[in-house]
Structure formats: C-alpha cells, structure tokens
Image (cartoon, rainbow, N blue to C red):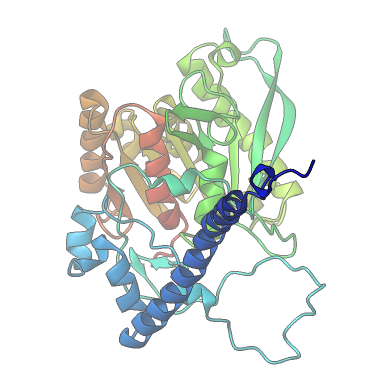
Length: 423
C-alpha cells in the first residue's frame, strides 16, 4: 500500500541556516580584531607623521613627551642646588636615528662587527673635560646629584668592562710587623681598554671590613633595584659622564689588617710598594714603569678615594704618607684630623705638589659623619692655599644614610673632576 506524502521526512533547512549563521558569527569575531589593529596602526602612522610635520626640532618633540622638559631651563647655579631632579639626559630617539655622515670608504661592511666608538667632543654632545672646575668644551660648571641616581645607572650595559683579580702576600702588621698574610685586589678595565694609550687610575678603598669586591663586584639589594659599582662605572663610561679610567679596589678586611691603625700603616705601604707598582707595570697608565720615580711623575693621573674608614685612610694613609703618588682625593662619610693632614702636606717636598681635586661629602641623614666631613672640608679650604672652593675643592652631601646608595652617588659626582687639569 502506498504511503501518503505527509509521512515523508523533510530536510531540516532551518538547521542549515542556523549553522551558516553561527559560522559567519565565528568568522566575524576572528577577523574583526585583526582589521581593527590594522586600522589603528594606520591611524597611528598618520598621526605621527602629522605630529612630526608640526614639530620644528627634536628638542620640541622631547619637550612634549617629557613633563620635566616643560619647565624653563635653569641656570648653572640653580641646577647645582636642585641637581637631584635631572642628572643625565639620555639620547633621544630622534637623535639616535640620525646617522653620522660618512663616506662610503669609511663605512665598514655589514659583516665587520666593530665596537662602538665615543662620539667626537662638541658643545652639544661631548664628554666633560674640566679645567679649574669649568668644562673646556661647553664652558659649564659641574652639576651634582644630591639624591639617588636614576635606576638606569644600575642596569647592565651592552658594553661592559672587565674585573681582574690579583693576589699577593703582604706583611701582617700586628705587633709592629709579624708574619705574612695573603691578600688581593681587583682591577677594573673599562670596555674597549686599549694597551696603546694611557689611562688614569683611581684607587677606591672600602669601609671597615670591606674587601676587594665591595666597590666593584658586590651587589647591594635595595628592593626594586640591585646596585653594583661595576655596573655603575660601565654605565657612566658608556653614556659619556666622564672619560674611562682604570679602577683598583684593595682588600681591607678587619681580620687581615688587625685594627684600624695597623690597617692604615699596612695599606699605605702596600699601595706604595705593591699595588701601584704592579698596576703601572702590567697595565697602560701614565707611569712609564712601576718605579717610584715614574709614579711620582704621573701623580696627576692617579687618584685615591674611600668611604667611611676608607675615607679616613684617604687622609692618613694617602695624603699624609703618599701625597707624592696621588694628585686627587675623594673622601666620603669619613674624616681624620684635618689639622694634622694639612700640616703634613705643607711640609717638605709635599708643599710644592699641586692638588687637582679634593672632593668630600656624606649622607644627609647621618648627622655625625655629615658634621665631621663639613668641618674637615672647611678647615682644608681655609688653611690650604692650593684649594679653592668650586675650582678644585667641593663638598656635596647626598640625601641618605651611611649606605651604598649615597656612596655610589658620591663617586658619580666626584669621578668627572678627579683628573681635571689645573693651572
């Protein structure tokens, strides 16, 4: 018997329509974000082009992008009082993008990798070179940082220097000389160190109990930022804060020096008899060799710095007993008996030797050290005719306590001036 047409199964066209609709919906959600991003990029490009046409110089572009740049430029004197606001102005993208004009013969092949060279000195882009406290290129006096350095100075750079360790045997000065003790010191060589040209040498003494790593390799945890001296020096030299130099950091651990007085005696002899001669013999310095005669002739290119007990050593072990080997001094958060030191450097052959730089300071939240460093500085400037404030003598206190955040800012302020020329 034939079935009726009403019993036949009809194809569900409505289901097919629903599936097609769902498919279109899915494709829309997948494609719309991409179309939106492309449209946004095109609008950004058009906006940047339009903005670039409206700006007449890179300086205006920086001023619009940076809130700090909206302020009217300060004079050199005002900047010195408010230096914590801005220390180093990084190169802007517009400046970095502008290639130097070189001839095809000077442009190396892409496959020839070469280290970056410092830019030629000019009034706009240069490394400060001070003479009697004034830059010989731009004519400006130094502007000091009185707060903590920007975090960027503690970020590792692509062009990093190296630290080499040298070990030696020293006399153990307990009971006026007894036995020997193994010691070592670190030598920092800046990136691109070239044995064919001479370098200035800075010796940095840590505080009581410090060792050869304190100034260079030790990492100090300040929560969001990790501070390290080597990274700071890498950044200073890479950004052109000052000329690269060799930095030497000895060990003054208490267990190896048998007390502060014996340690000063020990270190003053080690500097003279072991450390400086080794550096001059094995590295490219202004001294022809490691003899005392050569070191004395090159004293303008050797500087001595230290913090806390290391600052005390700068006066007692450095100025009083090695004034003929160092032309510049930096003492942070520490002081000796200034009247004794001044009398020593005005006696005999020391009296005719010039002083390139004397720099001191302390943390503002360490009342005792701040008080004594100020008293010592005032005594030096008032009683030593070779020192003139603002010419080759500076006292700069930094916001903070008796801590590495202060001392790293101290060395940042002092280093560009330590090897300045003087009349």
